[in-house]
Length: 113
Image 1 (cartoon, helix red, strand yellow):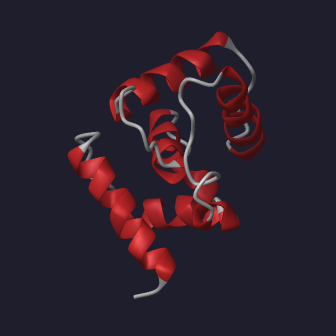
Image 2: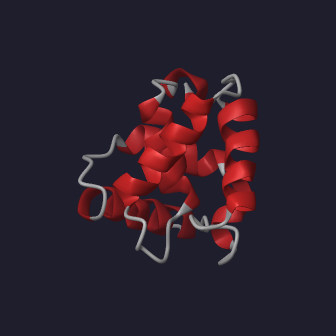
């Protein structure tokens, strides 16, 4: 298995055990690939859920630019709900997992088609 395959397996395990979500592995793979080289960097591969600046970056770069959503309070609410799903006390919130949860929440799977 490649390093990316190992990471996808780790993300699928997080979705299953921590988020109680049965992941669509094809979509998870596409979301992971879309994260680019960030998944291989220890700092960039995770999201600091308590950092307002980090959450603003996720909103701006992923929800608005990648998923094509309009800026609204609904984006902040969805991001907060995704963090609740992952577990706010969870130290390592993987970017690909959070992006997967948000993609499913907004029904934007076609973006990765």
